[in-house]
Image 1 (cartoon, rainbow, N blue to C red):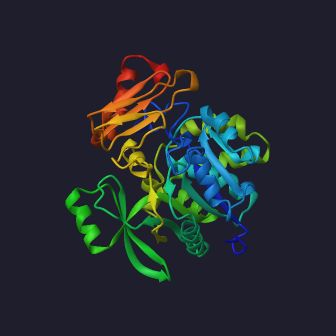
Image 2: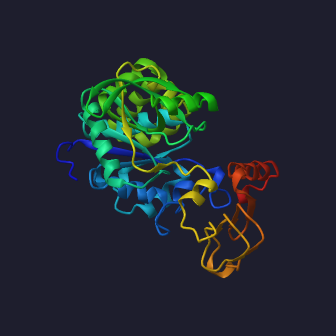
Image 3: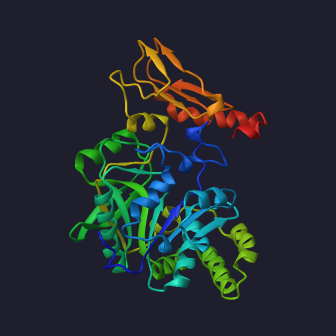
Length: 366
């Protein structure tokens, strides 16, 4: 697949999250996107995201938005990325400032840029179809629509936001009629039965000038901050004003700040084996398993054990043999300094350990 039709297509991968549901593997300085939770044990989620879009967006047009404390590790994982293409935020201010700053940086390079924004921590099974959907979304974006990729739902999920499909705009492109936050199960079931809604996966495609106009209309404080950064960048002073600007701009999501207010919003349905890898439960679902449904490292042993996930993330000198006997549906995750054991059905509750450790002042473990 070629990017010949979109030589002005750029990408921003948002890579600043914490991923507390993946403790103890995920820590503040080594969050979820740095973990190998996809199909390849030697490839982090961030590396996979960059590789996945490389056939249509080369490294020189790829930007990573991350936290300042994660900059060094990000550069280590993506050594081919130009130095200036890692945007290290001084503090987390949610997705609208993140996307706004990245859009401004790209627009300075190419006023006609079309920008693809992707989370760093998703898994995609059919990568060719994924790229086709992104290019279809770029078609809509070129016409002035802020376009989102909506995932064709496979279950009545209450943990995702939804996008209602509106009138067709072109083949494979619909107007986005309405955004809905995480619905109760009965509503999610009705959406699934009607086929009227798509999951909101947090992927956006837009012309840089259109996004800047929408930010100016709906988030004037952010627009003012971006103008300050533009002016400072012309004088080579952007780094010196960045901290002050990020302290002053509002902490707001792009969904609440822009998407829910913009008039020209489109959605492209996507069905390419998507997962947001939201917990250790999802990691078990994606992993290779033995005949008893156990996902295990080579040195684990089991007897009368079923449906367990075991991850040994300790360094070589700390590796232990892990034995499971007569237990089912557990998550067992070992690192050099911590051990997590919980039922798979409560995988989301791994974050409770992080909360408890913070309360106890054990910051070295979070």
